[in-house]
Length: 270
Image (tube, rainbow, N blue to C red; front, side, top):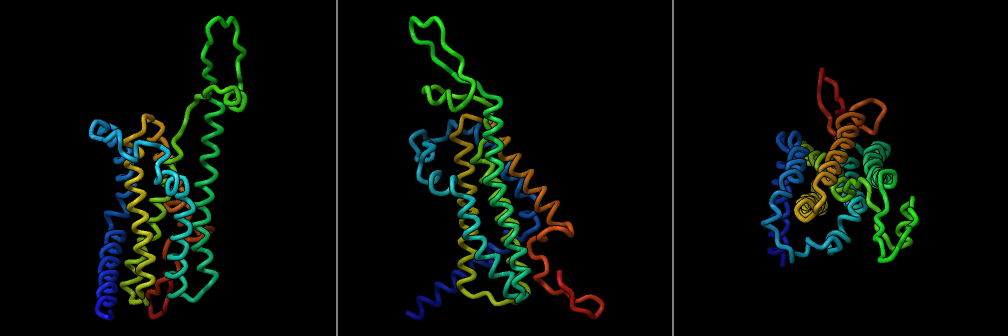
């Protein structure tokens, strides 16, 4: 039994080391957003290779309902545990941990609020599609989504994909936060099996988001809406992680204040 436990712990250690190096690499940090853009831009042209009977061809499949629609919650739940552990152990400063957790709260707020703005845009640009029954001389025009759908008709406006927006923003946020772990390990901080498992769960969630984004792009018929959704997700990631979080009046970037460095004989924090 002990041999099996030791083997599992060793496997977890090796897998976490490999994933940490990949997520912390320069190529990953500089080109991951380009990879997501390429996935959504190129994948739709491969629809002929897709299986129309696949579970992912149904928009109400298990993964869409349980993961895509709840991706903000899954991201905050798993990532907050990881951020809390890796920020509290090196610093022992609860206030700094709360500042790092604030980034996750901001990402979750964006995931919830921005799609609401997408819906408003669809309402403003849409119109009601009303079939003309035989013998009908006059059909009143329905001006709002509520009255249109209440009559059993379809409202069509400019729709930006909430799925691709949410998956892109959550994926980029996960990649940014998890990239800290390779620096954490290099500094020799305590990294038990439980922490490594939490890291691997987050890395697995990131891989699942990539798969779901690819399937969403493959089986959707709204190419421009999907591309705009990815572009909006990338834009808000750039505004926060590559812009605002690098300023003084912000929660700080991932890893801020966690890793000591020695300069001029004094112990400073990055």
